[in-house]
Image 1 (cartoon, rainbow, N blue to C red):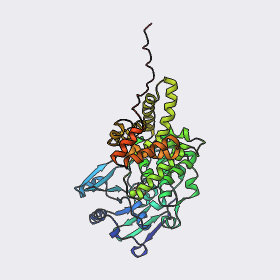
Image 2 (cartoon, rainbow, N blue to C red):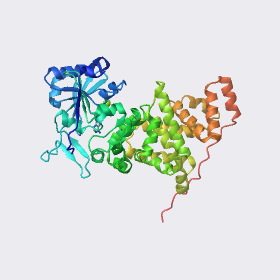
Image 3 (tube, rainbow, N blue to C red):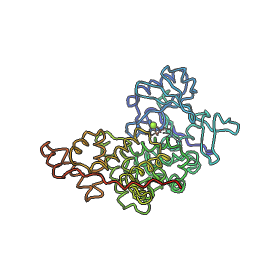
Image 4 (tube, rainbow, N blue to C red):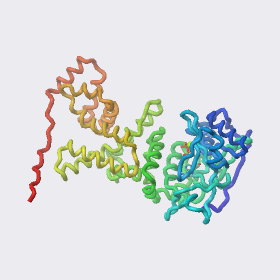
Length: 436
Ligand code: ATP
Ligand code: MG
């Protein structure tokens, strides 16, 4: 609970550069409709922050004193969602405007239906409504506690948010340790905003993170998948990778990679992670498509190989069969921290299978592989691996690069030079155990 009142600052219409013409037309419609119906209506959080920074907001969130039911009565295109936080989604085709009722502080007398906290201080449910002042105290960073009031076009800033925005300081509202306990995802958000907004965390905001990082293990895996996407698919993957490692957070998201990275940030594993992050950032900068599956496939490749080596020894399996076992093991283990939806794990599996198939090019195989629906992703991972590992892997990647960009006659010649197809060597079958 925060006892100290937050400082409030109001910038009138002529004291700031935010104009409705830079907002989503639909967000403006929602703001005006709420306001005309007699409710308070504010554009809040990242929308205001990014507009003040002359950046394009990712989404436009609205806060109001109307309850979810009152919002629903006002908009035909409205769905109420969420249990932990009840919210209204106003749907305009593909655009969703999120409208939240201003949140208040919990009282001892609140029923579990409204608010619930775990023994460790984590907020499990949070549906107590309040005033704008209280709502501001519940937000994470001062630069996110900014409200654009549609009634008079002013900006209401809490906790020195405007100064922090100008100085580039990311400052947690209230006592950072308590706030991280309430919601450990705020640690990931701190990293994400620091890199996205090019800001420095204030010392109190930064200090507890390294030691509190393990609290992330209590966060449901589906929520961490959302955060993973925001961290790695928003153009700042490389910067986030470095910072997450620095603050012991990467190992919370990717425990299966952590063992390989331990005391070895200069090794080939970290080099591959950095390369895939850099590549993803570049693709986004060039408006190329990215998928959460590819980064997962690349991150888990080294752990899979390492696990396969162990399985080969333990279970006396062939390399191929051991890789199949390792893919399942590592993928299952990873999904306990980040719930990767099936469509993405199945694409990652295709990419891994292709790493095993791409070396086998003789006869008609190479031509067939080119038509594989995930060939491009499989080849992309091979390229990255080649860049890091060199040697045979690099030569193989180069072979595929040439093969894709040459004439059919040369392609046939390239395949011919490889010689006749080899039979895959299988480990000798174990004798079935005879009952005693
Ligand atoms: P972006 O949309 O660019 O990721 P954002 O600041 O808008 O950044 P959202 O996740 O869209 O982030 O959340 C909107 C606002 O809700 C935030 O600005 C913040 O005020 C508040 N908020 C979101 N998540 C939390 C949280 N875990 N704890 C406290 N406040 C939060
Ligand atoms: Mg937002």
